[in-house]
Image (cartoon, rainbow, N blue to C red; front, top):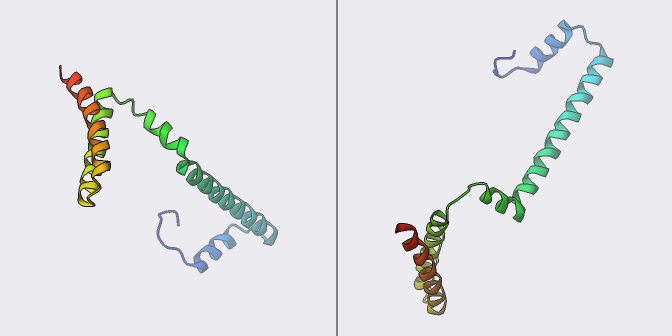
Length: 114
């Protein structure tokens, strides 16, 4: 029964009867199983909550140990995407702001290519 195949309730009950576990032992086992499942669900909820927090993202991002050039490339990609969106929406004031930031990023990239 441990080969990850589907098991019927009858097979489970037969296996429990083979172990000669009485009602008291069965109840204790059920309590342990439910308790463990609740703990796992609580841990999963906690992990999801922590993972969605702002600090988790920044900590995970810091663990990448990106070089200045790699960070600049990522920023350039983001800025180019935003520029395309704003051009399509004809939001030219935002395009001008992005263009200024893009010039700063390009300086970093040129410095890295020397």
